[in-house]
Image (cartoon, rainbow, N blue to C red; front, top):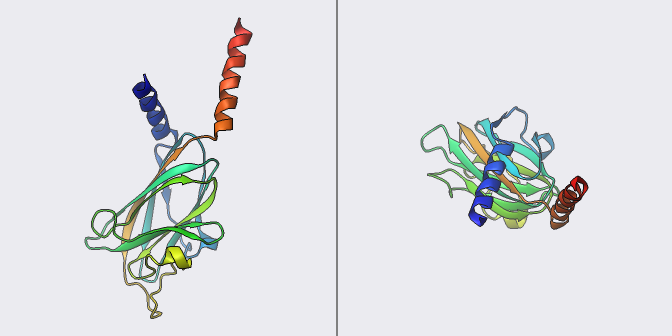
Length: 187
């Protein structure tokens, strides 16, 4: 029984935003200019981003969560040997996650559990722009190396963002009480 319920919830989550595609548009080189991906709520879903990164370029995207969520970010690059990095940033500019090569080859991949409701940013840039110390220092990707030169990477990419959102316990209780009220009225 538990297995059937879990499979049903997973299927509903996968279909909630299934087929959502978003094409990156320039100029989105700063958090202030981030492409808005929208607001996501229970049960979750997924989104595929199409983008292109050029030398000295960084692409920023924003999204809002209505409830606490677990998220997965997986990237795929067009060019063999392309080396990118990814940051997840909170509204105040705090870097909460960074990755360089956890995906396949030199592709970044991030998984975050229990991310609080709010607005967040995804930054995609080339190798060397920032490093793992960005989580502690809140250094944001800007398309430039410490030497002032551009990062030198150039490739197209796809970024798959998966959301698994569980409503707050109070919201679940209210849904249950609503179902109980409907059942009682039918009698």
